[in-house]
Amino acid sequence: ALREIGDEVEVDFTDGQTRRYDLVIGADGLYSKLRTHLFPNAPKPRYSGQAVWRAILPRPAEITTCTMWMGPQIKPGVNPVSKDEMYLFVTEPRPVNDHVDPATFVARLRGLLEDFSAPVLKTIRDQLDDNARIIFRPLEGLLLPRPWYQGRVVLIGDAVHATTPHLASGACIGIEDALVLADELARNGTVALALSAFEERRWERCRMVVENSARLGEIEVGGGDKDEHSRIMRESHAALVQPI
Image (cartoon, rainbow, N blue to C red; front, side, top):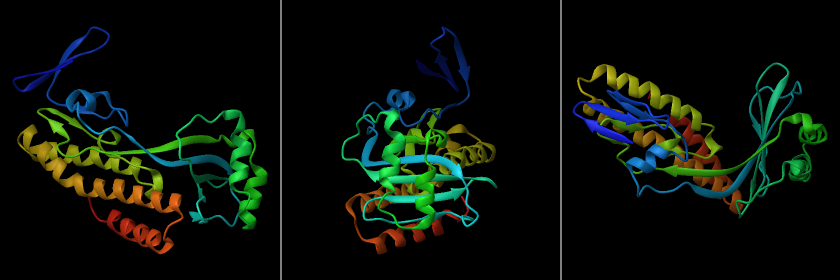
């Protein structure tokens, strides 16, 4: 439980402890319990109709930067993560968010790459095995309408702006939240002013990432306009390089 008492928040923990704080920050993710507590009518996470596969593989010499291939509905991509390894991601449409047996991961991921003729993707497909550390995730998103705070309790990160990974910015905008919140707490005389300024600085940037990422996913799932896809990518990355 949470109770605001004067200029503090009294917090009851599940281990029986009760403590008081000047500020409570909820950074508890997509299925945030603190969001449900503060805003019982908040929207629920929404499944996008798309899923992503990820794996770590040896990096061929020709892979020096992020590279993607656009199929009608399947999008593979690779990105170097070290001198010797690269990160593979593959998005696929999945109308139903059902369970996928991990025992089938290798065969399913190989199957998604089967129709691509690029030599590097053929090599990747042949390398996929149980050592590739394959992870499968359904893609969900959420954008909490303002406000993102109530009294001396504020939500940040995926608790308020969970995004699909199409702009590779979900973790980034969460980290930015922490930086901006610290900045506004340092420069403002009261918690109320700091939280208002924090939200004002973060809303538009985070909204852009969540909504543009969702639109990119819609285009991929529906086999939509590749020119629109490219335009959204360019405009979004141009916005993301601006100061926060």
